[in-house]
Every structure is written in C-alpha cells, then in structure tokens.
Image (tube, rainbow, N blue to C red):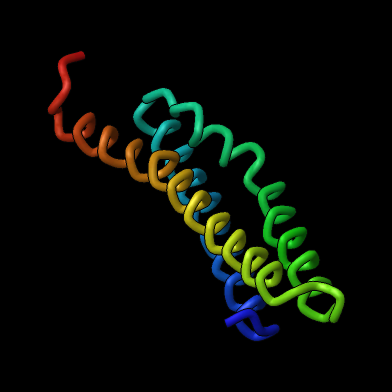
Length: 117
C-alpha cells in the first residue's frame, strides 16, 4: 500500500483539491464583484491564501518519501504516514466544499431572486 507511486498519486490528488478550491474561490470572487454579494470567510481565505496551501502536500510528500526510503522505520509507521496523507486529503476536501460550493448555492438563489433584499 505504501509505495512511492501511491505517495505521489496521493500528493497530486491533494494538489488537485487545492487547485480546485483556489479556482472556485476566484470564480466566487468574480460573482461577488458582479452581484455585490459578500464572500464568506473560508472562500475569502482560499482566494487570498490558496497558493500557500501547496505547502501542505509538498511537506507531507517529502516526509512520506523520506520515511518510505528509510529502512529504520517499521511498516506500521509507514502505513500511519500514508494514512495521514489520506486524512489530509479528506480534510482538504471538507474545507473546499463549504468554501466554494455553499457560496455558489447562495449566489444562485440570490441571482434568481430567491432571497428578499
């Protein structure tokens, strides 16, 4: 389970989630500009500092590859490091969903006149 190939695939998936979050926050910012609807905090955080999120998969991937290549570490510890990467991916996904998709739902309702102004 814990191989270099799987580690790289997991790190790339983490990068993909961060890219999706940053791009989605940029689109929400454009919608905010057009419709004058305030952007929620998590979306503004992704918009302003989303690029710094790339430190997360870079750090995890570096640590995971060092642990994988070092024979001093046990297989249980290696599997724990790999499981932490999966946990990081899940946490990133759960941070991107409210940051990007909830403003979309709000703005769609706002655009259609579903909210009282």
